Image (cartoon, rainbow, N blue to C red; front, side):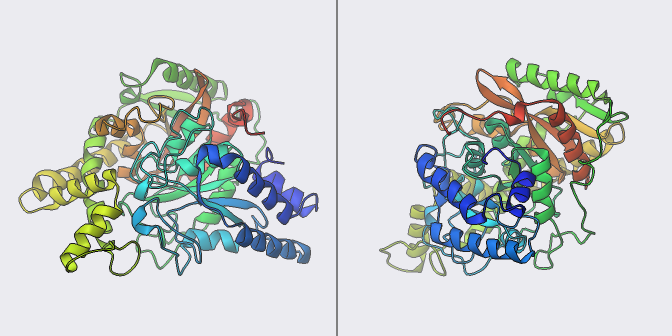
Length: 489
């Protein structure tokens, strides 16, 4: 049962082959058995999950099932969830029980999904390895001595080890796609504004976007159907017609299912910086796409090399503003001893935030300060515009841009912890997508040294359906995405 797709699980529940209670208990038992070695979950509430499963079984019995009724889904612990501990991986929210549901949580509940647990993450989504969580690092199911990628590493590890059929994540600079690549999953970052950010604890508001993590593009399409949609409570939510993101997936493939598709290969993605083993896998996947009928064209994204520098000005600046609300006064952690209000603020934040969060708050406050705003923040925003313009020009030559997701396979725990710059460069292929607000997806494309690698597909605005179809056609002819790590039977 744990190897079945979301569609197969829907069919099994509808046919009464298994009940939602039985399915949920199956995954809860797996979490209890395997999560101690992975640390993928922060909160699991068996009573609540089974209560939701019983309600789902009643819906199924009445013939009132929604698209995900009875299917257990794990949620990144960045989404406020009514009655559940919502920590964002931080000590400062270690006692925060949300009084309301984030839009994403509410949409999954309306679709009938069962919340199986809240997954571990880099603190406030700041990290590329899932080592900055107050609750300890998450381990990669493919090699427990390696990182799963961040910041959605808990969600990725949970799905990879079959502790959940699928999960949600958030992507600010690659935090869905990078862990998907390092854990052999499919992960999608939608166009900015397609999924509501209401109730999603903010890191960098102009970059954050929620998306799905699953084993295949077909599963991601079903999840995105549930997640996407306009929300008047989010001023950045886009009011556009709902669409079925799986509509192209059921079209018979034919001999050349991608005939006429133009795949852009940026010079900047195929130079130095990527490990030779990963590049060989990426090039083999591109050759497979040519066999499926696609043609490749050389393109250039000349401002891409500036994306990491621009991102690490803009994101910390927004973080320094967003995290000002955590002061020990209204909710969350409060320092036990203090002399006055200023002392309360400083001690609460010093004790409640981890080192990486403090580093980014300091950087962000600095670049927004008088005398440095024009030199840093304003310049970074200008570079952001150049990056978006580069993509716009590229999409006049091609339909989809392809390259590596991550420059390497999973690295060892602690390997880059003492060198923030090397850690930041882990996202060199993903950050530009967030700066431009584009959709992108990472899919498995093979293994190097026993560890998975990912292929990234980038599309123009609102082309999620095309990206999912292009990913799906590759997965119809390959089996990389079906591989699972050993030791989790």
